[in-house]
Length: 470
Image 1 (cartoon, rainbow, N blue to C red):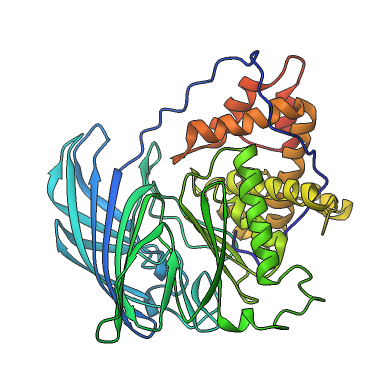
Image 2 (tube, one colour):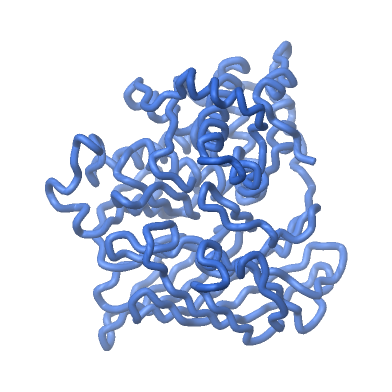
């Protein structure tokens, strides 16, 4: 979620995770062919100059399609906000392809492959990249001297039943990201005083030599790769075998740095406790977070944003919990965030309100009747794409719909279906699509399969204003 305090916490049904021997057999997962797949990313980066990264990136991929691949598209989201007039990333092809066109405000790059890649075959392209961190408070920017390199590195665009996805524009209201999980290996050389964290886990950090340190990261199943680096402090804890690390600029850890009137539970230790509780309960409700680490960067200017294996958040528990929920609803269970933002945001917000209710039986910034009345006046579909939401005046329809209304409807679904069956539905959905992509149809088909006798799911879909995928 790209947010500045846009969390909506609503009354929720709290239920344990129960199984029954009477459940029906699982429905088949959708058979949409997406590619290129079996992605392997390898980055070798020099990060010794302030706010600048230079290096190489290799992308190895498989062709799962029925016809040879003669070209591919890359997404260069680092250019998404600044566009072509002030490009934050420059890419030069070293081997395996030739660059043929920039598109979509220089956030997409078409590569003509040197050789056609037959169905089932693999290929490799190598790039030289230069990346600058913009001087702005953003998911790709700087927060109190710490670089946030979110969605900054080139990733392979997706080809599915609708063709290549390279025309989707960057949005500053929500997200437009859509990528397949890949295996990442990242080597970064930094100044000696740097701390570095992000997606995956740092498997090694070499001793300081000539004022520099070398870091090596691995992330076996990540849709993208985040780094945040600079002078930082860190505290950590463990939950269910997951190393949860909370980072921030040194100023965040100073006594009295957080105003309790603004952030009553915003201290580092308090935020870490909320993270620990979130991982514990989401593991129970949805499925195990099968990554070794979860990195959190907390800052008063951070807003809230999800990344694979990592989040940024203001020192506000509700925002932090929401972004952690995205590890289940987007990072591990993926979706096309431009086409179907409700699939990750509504589910993440529903998950958040369950945590808040579980922890202290209170609701903060509830979805008021006035908000629901305003939403109902729009006649918009909950499952509308980001193009529709971006076209609205102030973004409030997006907030009222995808967060408020979506969470309300999922809560109502859990009440009507019954606690045990609803939790099993969510758990089963997550297990069958883990590290894959879900669509609105996949979710509705799974709901229909687990709907109890007498439950009118079609009415729930109509009242929720959800349109099946076309």
